View (cartoon, rainbow, N blue to C red):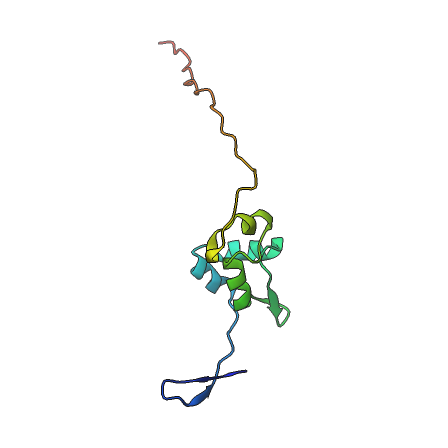
Length: 111
C-alpha cells in the first residue's frame, strides 16, 4: 500500500481500491447484475472469485474495459472512448428495404 498526503501535508496510508461486485458494477453501468455476470461468463469481462463463490471485478479491470483496452474483439477496435482515434475497418452494414406487410384478411363471417 502506498502513502498519500492529505490537505495538511501529513502522510496517510492509502486505502486499497476495493473490487466491484456485479451489483455495484451494474449500478455504475446502468444495466442488470445478470448482464455483468453474462459478460464474465462469456469471458469479455475478467473477474475473480472470493471464497470460491463470490464474484469480484477489479477496479483497474473496470477502467480498462471502459477505456476499451480490454473487451470483446471489435468493440475495442472501434471505440473512441478515452481519447483514442479510430478509422473505419471496412465492416459496412447493408440496409435493405423489405416489402410492406399486407394486413391479415379477416375471414368472411356468415350471419
